[in-house]
Amino acid sequence: MDRLSIPGQALGIAPLDRGFRMVGRAFTARTIPVATVSGTVGDYIDDVPEGNVVVLDNGGRLDGTVWGDILTIMAHRRGLAGTVIHGVCRDAPRSLEVGYPIFSRGVCMRSGRGRVQSDGYQVPVSLGDVRVEPGDMLVGDADGVIVVPQSRLDDVLAAARDIAEAEDRIRAEIEAGSRLDEARKRHRYFSLQKRG
Image 1: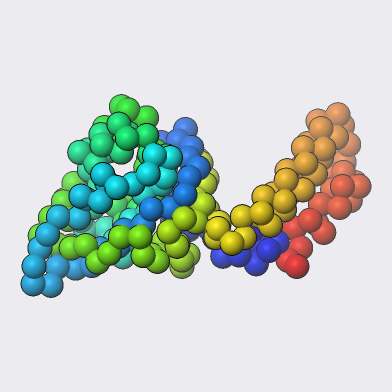
Image 2 (image 1 turned 180 degrees about the vertical axis):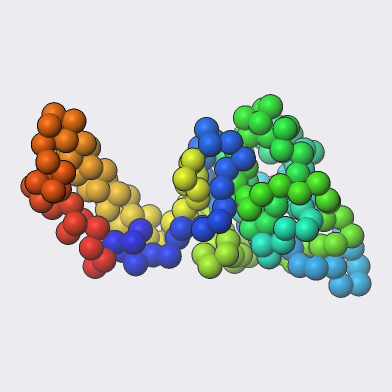
């Protein structure tokens, strides 16, 4: 993504469990602080297509959640790929128990009920500095989450394939005793990383 100058790394968002992995299209939801009318923020879950990733923009709040065990149970039962929250979640043990991937800024015991309200579903949202559109591809693993704009998916896959193949060859060579600098040079490693 760096090579293609795509700002897709959702910094500060990590998995509840380092073993969690997920890949799927974004189904987005945004919340805002309660104004005058407090309402539910989770009823959208029934409309998320199987295999999608729920992307919740709670403005990075650390003082109240928009995801807990009831949503985890429903998402897991419906076959969703995972949930990414620009904010925090609660009831983490349920996610770990059922193996449902959640990526967030952390955990908090306090519900968002009465503190936030829905501001839209399937709208552009943010994960920190990264914009997420409905349908964008999200990939999450032990290192965090990246967002691939759907319009750039083919470009990103091609670049990732080139880099992965070169890194596999470099690893094989250094495991066989080669010098790292020589292996990188042979496989044009730094030119693969160069922004184009």
